[in-house]
Length: 294
Image 1 (cartoon, helix red, strand yellow):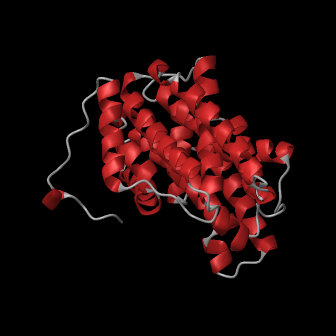
Image 2 (spheres, rainbow, N blue to C red):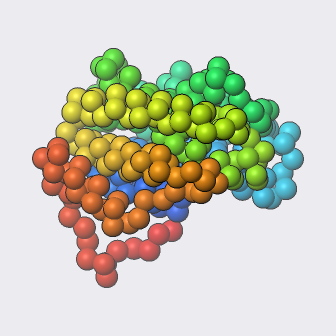
């Protein structure tokens, strides 16, 4: 990755997004090797900004739906333009474009993501087919973007990942998304008026979704040893965190309860992942020298 001041500033802006928005995913990314860590943060930052357009900040600011769509379209267009020219005045887009160019994240990965974000402005309830389309764009392709980073960061020219890794990335992304749908059901249905899973149908549907999540997690876990060594602990940690959430969802009958993984359990999951993959956790700076999150 380039060492220019602007590039460094863009990377810092992307890193601040993940620190502010995600404790679990943020923990996992700290366990990535330096070769890939910044790139994954760049991917997450663009995804997060797009999500805020359709789910959070734009709506809170009173932006009408038609204008949210125009803002989302403009972000997508700027992303493609930045990849082509190697620069954007939007720091988060600039950071993502640098990662895209180095790691081979192509429009075929990006376009489905923006299509799913656009769906949030157009559709409130989903059937099985629309759910699968939405999850592919909103989560599976994000896993594929990260996989492009894992395989290609630091290479002279990108190459296609192994098909087994592609399947594992897609299934892990799908499991993560369905878990989030279940744990955020109260907010999605109450604040946003959305039902991605049809869980309002009853307990039988919830059991069906959890069974699918378990199968996806199991399939994804089997591919972790195939990843580059500097990615395995982080991916195993993310997998463990969401598997723990799934276990808690299995034990929770109240669909409006948002389950959480306590911090000591998160730490234990990270240590188990490090031991399982025979990799030492990166050394941390003394607390007094750490910078506060932006």
